[in-house]
Length: 171
Image (cartoon, rainbow, N blue to C red; front, side, top):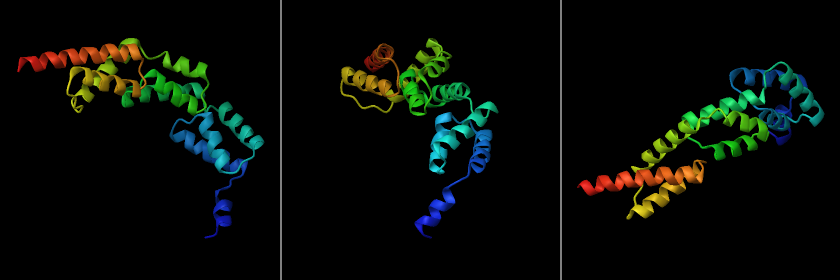
């Protein structure tokens, strides 16, 4: 198969792109950024892509605020991500900051702190550290990589190291 044939097969007309995106959006939430990226790959012009996107938004196949809320719920509950990491991922998906902040407002601070403590206590089982200081440093680094606030991570890691250190004193 020649490269010309591969490219020819991948291009879609605006009507085909609309039908394909309707099928995709019916199966799973998509953002406007996802749709733009797909249409660029299909070789649609910017004008045609915007027209197709406008139709999808009018017919409520694509709704960035609905997408952002679903994304936040998934990443908090299934991935254990923090607000910073979620905000960065939404930004990469083309979701504006106001929409991302509105979706992140649904996370309660208590729920976030509880999820962070769960993640760190799960991590402490697999971390090898010679000193409590080294353990705390590794837990803080891990918590920050999940996208949580530094102060919250520091407090949670300190509490875990304290309880771990007390359990070690029992033996």
